[in-house]
Image 1 (cartoon, helix red, strand yellow):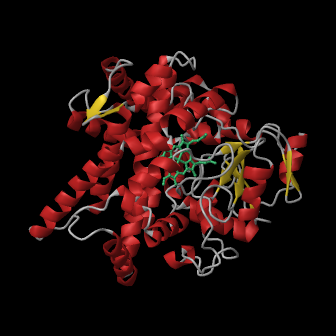
Image 2: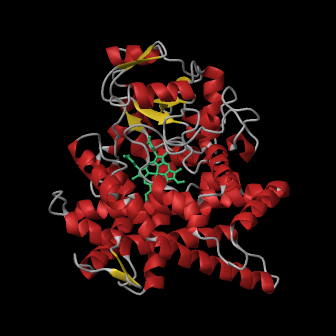
Image 3: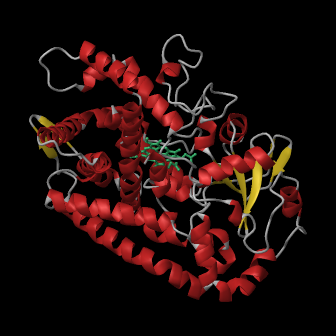
Length: 486
Ligand code: HEM
């Protein structure tokens, strides 16, 4: 179940990063596109090995079996993160390898040391992104946080997210939303258990995280909630499919610029984007800067309220606001539910660990309390270790959103030319056998006191454990994740 889940790739970043594709999809797509192949070959081979950039790329370690037109695409199997890890082990050097994915030279980074070079030593040079026709449509000209190129606009919206939207204070304020949703999940599970019915945990956890994100982003006052939340779920899934599908332009950018190809590639994305746009327009129109969701005495503004209230101060257009909102949904929903699902799957497979965790919870929650409160969680060191271990072994973002280099950089004795796409394999880094003992096993004890890796954490400073990345493009979502999963 778990590996399939990684592949079904529900999370924004996971989708975005799936620049490497299942072979089947590739073969089908290429058959369909056969008439275009000759043209492709022309585009794909232009400038080959003649420029200084090509000469630098040619020095990088790379699998020898490169085919005309598709390059190394045929080497990438149905689990791209696994294929890439294996390919780097076989053909890479120092955790680095160059793949030609169609016409796009792509640097694959697969070891803690190489990741440190990219995300810390040369962070500035590797901090950009390259949008595509699809991200331009779904994210309002790629003006969201995840796809914006490095520069003024990205700095501005990233600041908004970290100082206004995803702050500890703000996330704490939504505690009542989380507690309400946890109670609902408990009730549903309890009812099913009483009737001896099986529970679809994946569905329940996805529903749970989606409900939380919906209430945090757009509050409780606007539109009939059930309908709105369902629509958000559908649209998030539609985005994931589009971002994770085979997009010709990702591999053959020159082809993508041809009007006719762009039209075909973009038709579906435009339909989905129109539905997002209608929904976001209705939600934004339903808000005004003074609107607040009430909970007892607390007055909690949702993320739309916050964005509208600072819109002028930060010079945001309405489309910028919408792009940020799409990011929050896309990035915030599946990640947390995937972590929860893997944690449950691992604990079910290892009842001894489940008992240990239950004993910790029972020892801390006062007798008679039917719910664990968020205050109780701080003292639960084994629970924290279980979550860390889940993130190490099953990071929901297996391959990071591709980075783009802005300047030439020397790494591990190679010069990586400016304009190179970089894929960081977070999944492989978490399972690196030179960093982790019994790397493929679920052992939360490795994060408990007394273990040599007890203090390793995911703040982006320990390069052997990067579930959220590191550096300028590191995930800004650690604060909400903490609250949603625990
Ligand atoms: C378990 C939960 C999550 C994990 C493991 C995770 C992981 C990541 C990773 C690995 C990246 C890419 C870093 C890079 O490209 O170098 C990323 C980017 C991002 N994440 Fe998350 N994420 C999670 C949850 C969230 C949540 C809850 C939000 C917001 C509500 C969020 C918002 C973002 C955004 C906006 C970016 C793009 C940052 C940028 O390009 O500047 N993530 N995340």
